[in-house]
Image 1 (cartoon, rainbow, N blue to C red):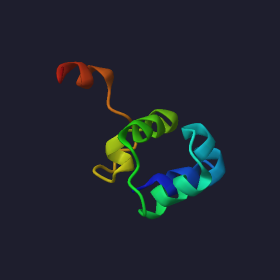
Image 2: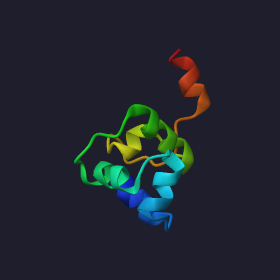
Image 3: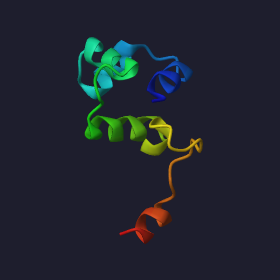
Image 4: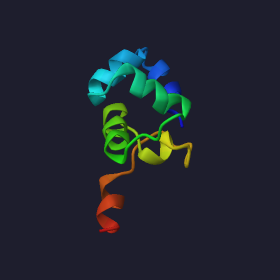
Length: 76
């Protein structure tokens, strides 16, 4: 996952992001190193915070921009 890369790009510490997600720094570090899977609700929260898509964070796309609202509406 790209959560470490994007965190470092924004000059944030693990503690900073842990506070945003309301988890401990240790729990967040486990998400970054793959020792624990990040819950979907926290992944969505990160995507919204970083203004990107969950697909980008999960390395399913290299497109950093979030999907447009019109695309979301078409899929409903």
